[in-house]
Length: 517
Image 1 (cartoon, rainbow, N blue to C red):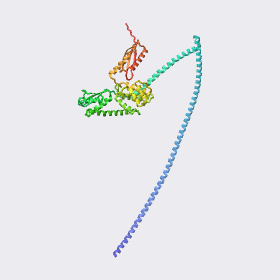
Image 2: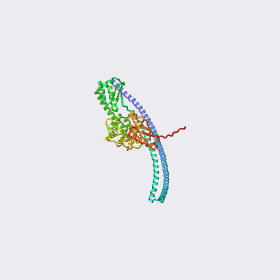
Image 3: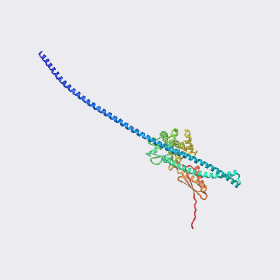
Image 4: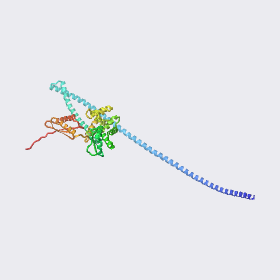
């Protein structure tokens, strides 16, 4: 019990001591807290003073900025005012000058009016004087020749008319020569512009194709047993197949470029595959033919797109692609048609025509050549017929006929196509002819020239594009030489087929010879 009481007493003492200690600590913490609060209050007060100072500075800066902007705006407005004032002053000065000019023009107009009135009065006086002189001349003629007044009047008027006609003829001849010179200069300029802005490619076609083979043993397989394979090839392909001692080569011969191209591709595929038999030949031929049909249609579409044309019938587009496998005098028909289309477009543009329509007529002017292997008739008639069938423009039809002289050119576009066709066909290197036809044409030209009376000799030169005629000076005078040249040109034009044009030069030379003895 005593222990318990002693323990309780010790606990009470401990609690009291602890309370006193805690209180002391709390008092110390309170003092510290008070000091911290005072320090924070002073810091807040100092910060508030700083903010107030900053606010005052900001207000001052805002006032300064506003004042500066006001001054800048005032200066700008003053400058604009001064500028507008100066501009108004200048306009007033211009108006004043214009007013002076108008006054001057008005004065000149009044002066011109007076001059015109004076000139009119002088003309009236001259007319009266002219009539008086005619009357006097009539009286003189009546008295001198015994003519009546009416007869004398007619005679005077006839002589005046003859004199006037001479003057008129002289003026007409003068301006006609000037017009010819200007027209020739303009034509040369247009042709030069067209030819320099288009450079065509030269593509000569041959009558044979050569297929390369790696092994000459394949020649026997192409011939086949008892010649069955080569007979089938020639029958299906429609070409002549020449197999000779030429190493690693087979020659295909045909005037039809389309069939020859198909045959070349068929034999290349057969050689590559190695299986050469009649059934296989027919299968390969059908496959290649279908590929070529698709390729020529694609070729035609690409060309139409490049030329900027539209609305053309698909059959005509396909025929344009087929021109790639047609040649005339060694010149590829498609390359020629493209040249004509481009040149005609440029010429039409230079002469104020429709460039697109000229290109259309140019690309279609020889379209009949794509049909001449399948149908009878000239390419002109075939081309015009198929273009009518597919509702082509009348200018296209006219160009098809006119470029071979079957019709007159009715429009600028048609004339441009005819000019472009002559340029493309006649340029050096464009066409290649066989020797026999060339010699025949040259002989015909010389025979036509020498058949004329008064011609001593004739020589076709410049690849048959010019004929020089030597005339007998004792039988032919200068005027007759011009007539002979015209007759020879007409004879050549009506009897000889030739590309481009042929120049006829008649030379008349007089020589005086004597001897000193």
